[in-house]
Image (cartoon, rainbow, N blue to C red; front, side, top):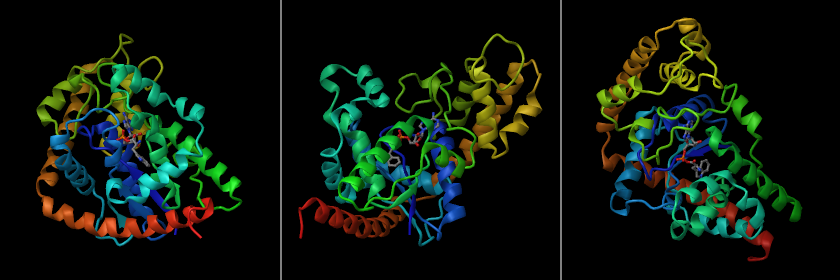
Length: 342
Ligand code: TYM
């Protein structure tokens, strides 16, 4: 069976950008397609220290990431839904090395995320791991015959690299060993969206809301106190146009709020746009979004608190047994193709 697969790192607290851009589309897809596809929602913990992190809290943060999946509604009792960490499936790191040798330095060096993140770091903090990040991501995807990979807009370039490397490998060895995930446009269509999703920073809506941003007011983390989250929405950067409309180019701040309001209440964006069209009081819209976000956080955090670490360890044991079986079989076939095994 083919797979729908995604991963969300837990090196910092995930934001509502991750939740709306990745958890929700993935969980919707899981509920619609489990059985027709295998559903892999994993934690790419090996990707987490490509930039510096606090290692002392890291293990607990990973467990918390899985609690978030469950609190967001992932049905972990479904036999076709699998949760695991890439660190606990050694085939990921092994396939990554093999793919490294079939990826051109130039194509990896073109990745925008590497350029942006390395520009933010001091020179001696830019690791080889940060450079190699998309190739490990390709291994994560290719080990499981993944056809669909729900992702936010910022990750499409990495998906394209994965498609290029996998196609080249299949051509070189004259075998369709890797399932090629569908193109960006088809992914977007499959997720039922019109465009790739990008929730914007609250303080600078020209940028995405990023969990690694140092500007606390730019982001709403899933663990934010609901009242603090509401006040961040109330102080969100807007514009001086003076009329509410959905226009990402001229009114990115207002458009971002409309999008958050629609996604968090699971209603069509078009309905929210029509409700607010032509209104002039930005404060009223902010108030409404602030209460939607704080109600959501209150409910979500209540659910997280009910899940124990022991529950999570059990989920992982089952998920990692499955993942190792599937991934080892694919790795074995690749090792044969490249001449490492008879
Ligand atoms: P991460 O943890 O940085 O992001 C997780 C997901 O959240 C999406 N996202 C957003 N979506 C909308 N608006 C935003 N402001 C926003 N910020 C983040 C990201 O696009 C992503 O879908 N490289 C992956 C992790 C990964 C992975 C994989 C994913 C590693 N291996 C294999 C899929 C398949 C990442 O960006 O994680």
